Image (cartoon, rainbow, N blue to C red; front, side, top):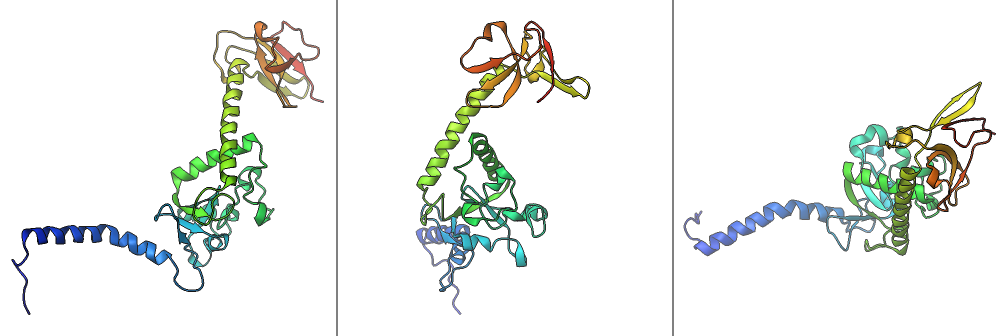
Length: 272
């Protein structure tokens, strides 16, 4: 048996080292992705590779359903069309646990409605009917899953197409998310300008609302007067502390409490 020592030129030796390095770094990754593609007639639950990113898998709903923790399978869930591996928290998402409802599917709507009994698969990820606060909550949930769990890929359906590209539905949702962010910004500005009252309730006196320099968690150098405040397009009111100069405004609707002096910094009332 011949031993090939000292028969490499320097350039050949460098080429061998570079080749070995490339194979050592990328071979496991390449093999992992090759295994995820099914060359048989029946598709496996591993999904297909995305057109944009070879690290990213594309799942049909049927493929995602297999990742439900049953029979030793990992546990994946999808939120807004993006898939996360939550296997490490099997105690929460595994069979028989509190949030197994989310395993192997995209049930984004239930993150807001908490309706775990409605199993209408076709509507489980139809989030465009949600109002602005629900949209904002979904974005917060998305941030949570991105930060805590391993991202695996996308679900082919409402949010992403067969190539992993965004659909019109996804673009529409993101536009709504921007509007919700703007709404939240405006509401926070209103709460700075019209901070909430202190509030308590007793059986004898009913509701007691009053203003201080720190009511509503907003520290300030003024106190204000308790008033019923209605935000535009909102039928529900909240108690807000209002400065004299802000009693006349068009950006919100302000009404006094019945049987409460207009110069009083506290009021009592009974709910209807």
